[in-house]
Length: 146
Image 1 (cartoon, rainbow, N blue to C red):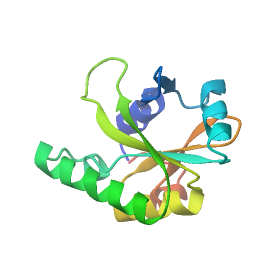
Image 2 (image 1 turned 90 degrees about the vertical axis):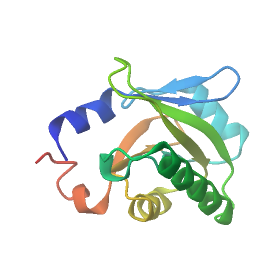
Image 3 (image 1 turned 180 degrees about the vertical axis):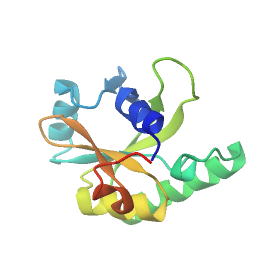
Image 4 (image 1 turned 30 degrees about the vertical axis):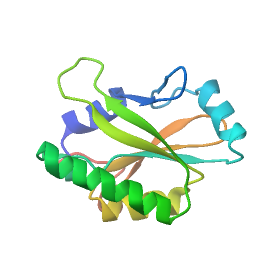
């Protein structure tokens, strides 16, 4: 993964469309997300998109179809979801539709990254701490850059 891609993942705002919306940032605990998980009776969640596989831009139609397939997959896993978006705080790249999958664990996160060709997802623990989890092909390198 290129250094600028990794930096973008770390700088992004991961917005969950609750009322009011909640932004997560990597490494910053979110009490609002911790409360959300507790309200839903889960200890973990995964914030994931199917847009732009392996960070390669795709058409709007392809991204929409992939995102719908992700929603169907999560429904098949009996995971409740809340819509969201990955946002660039500098506005250099467009937001990506995402889903917060309530109750998803790190094994599910890995399955989703492989199935939907994503470099990383955001894993959230019960304390509301978001962290990047990397695709298995990158995990051994800690998301290492090319």
